[in-house]
Image (cartoon, rainbow, N blue to C red):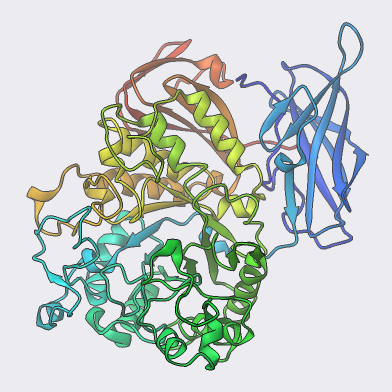
Length: 612
């Protein structure tokens, strides 16, 4: 790719309002590098009621080597799609370029990849530069009270140093006894790491260590300390300025859930309509055929009331006092409300959002969308996605160790196939292009989670630190899964749920806490993190981009191996000052950067001036 290309993104530098009202005109700006070429005319092509419309832009001035163009577009539909059409002079007549959210093209393109502005409620401001830390409660920390609790009848008692089984009959039965007071006692460590959001996987009682098989949605598992322990945790987090999010299974319950047991016992019960039973009530639909996870039927109005709209519904109960959760991550949000020919997924997501924001307008709602999330996540339901498609999978492929044998997201492959940086960029653009700018900024950038192999088992030595830096500095919410900061390993999701090595330095594989703390501090303090983003270079071992705002910009160069990077390839004439973050050795000549690798390097640059 060429660094000198026309540019637009959804940030305030380029869009007058990220959430304009219907019937308003939205101001849009494009900037064209003066050494790319001179545009003779520019149009904004919008899609209004499914019909293309063209608004001609006017040149508003030059600044910093860019020529700026501005136009306005009538916001007709809740989701307004648009692109720029750029005319330049050619030897045989005018040449027309199309700029959409996937990049610059010398041809017409699908509307799917167009830029978007929407009337959807954006994620709360506190999420914009936040760092998320994911806690799997059974394996995070044990308080003094935890030792006095009996092992449940479904559990296999484990000591904190018992090896985790990644497969076999005891995968979901190994019980380590971590609890919520253990999380509360470690909040200072999380704060030192730069954590803003503590995201808890389910805290409801179940018959497994993962608790995605809830037996009720109206109580905290006594094994975790009960309701009072959650209240103590949220209060302590809030006192430190941190948020707490829960994890909710809107797609299914456990087969011991009070709703399901009543439904099974009485085909005429209200709860029987919550699920999908066959005609003679002898069988039922479940998540991927796992009978311990019966699937919820969102066509049931009674279920909607019990789960969402009711005064003490599941969604509402935990957002209200005394619990005061700050939002929900919805488990398998992509499958919720979908079964065969039935698809009411977007309707259910919108219903949940409406109820959440009615209770707490400053709450955050994220939906798990394991593959391409663009079609589902438009901000009117889930405000952002927990997805692996646009960040996690391509980063694994770029930084992957060819000898790694891990679960590659359920594919039949033995591990991630290695790719060059240009493939990473193409994948990332393709699978994030359907996001509006607010959705993109609220979408989780995870190296790994409780459902995947660990980055440390997937990547080359030093790779996880590079991926962590990129996750922190790209648009989106970076995710630290508990144990990433200690370099913990695991070949699949179950094997990755390792008890944390608190006060056990011999169990720390690679101590990345200083790296995470430095990156989080940079993320929090730089106004560029709330600004725009422009790709500069994607070639072989090198990925480079710049985050931009009126106040300052951050140049980010990530390498998976030692590399010489021409300074001109970054769109700069010189780079004579030291980086504010360096993940490996760095030196420079007047023409090139000499970067050790793997490593990520960040420089502060001047802000972007927009002509009046």
